[in-house]
Length: 357
Image (cartoon, rainbow, N blue to C red; front, side, top):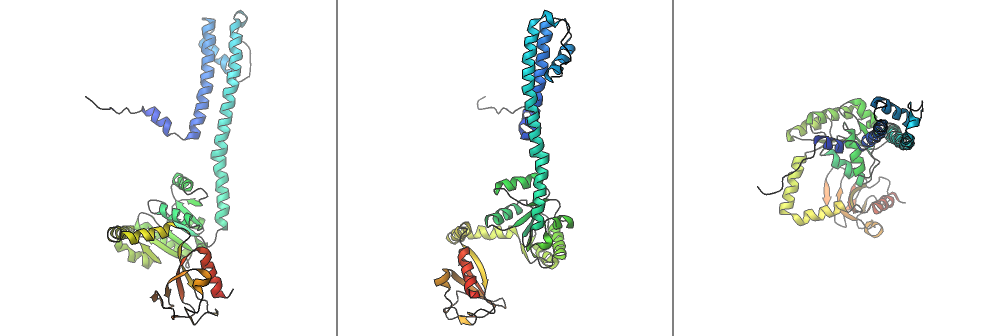
């Protein structure tokens, strides 16, 4: 026979490798301390050649390493080498105990105490949030929602049952993730995430029934929140909308549209992807204020391009109709929204221009 035969590691080795690093360090320190005690006891027992039992020498090693120092073994005067071994045992034991104590202290501080401190600090941050977003479920879909919100600098809180998964997700986005560990279908979990003060909620669980329940709960707790719900099955979109969802998104349908776009319009898809990756360029809606001095004037008269360097793609009228690629002579009344593309700073300039600042 030829070829390489895969060699699998023993189960104990796999268990050790998969163990939490902090626990592994503590166990290493314990094993080192036990090894020092056992080795010292066996060496003294061999030197005595039967004068002391193995139990006596190991017990002697224990109180020597612990620096309790009850007494020497009877007849130690006849074995000068025993005192040399005892000195080495004391020094080695002090080092092993110091290593064990420092490792255990680090585990407590970084683990129990550190986690409690982080939870307390996070709780204070959650209580101070307002106008943020809540992401219910950080699985296959919710994970990307969290990453996207983090990239565009939005304030949000994630909810999921898997705390370890939330901590890994926090590391992936650079830390600082605010989250609540719990079942998002329960009202107290949503309240803990500040849903009553939230501007919007994304329900991204893998079961439409759970998303429906979350939609109903959020609509009751915060009637003004914008709710976006994931719809696994297309036929459930109507039910989610009736329950109070402002919009539903079907990952399967969106994925199909993307596949077709990549197939028949690859250049246009690449262009839109470039806009999405370039975080300085964004599509924004800016409304014409009722008291603006520019209200009722033509698009040509408003110096948008000169002062803000924004591109006006369309206008959204108060009745919901869109005017795409508006003509320069198009009159912009109060309440009309400009759909522009450009940098965030320039969008702020447009708002200031329309406000008369």
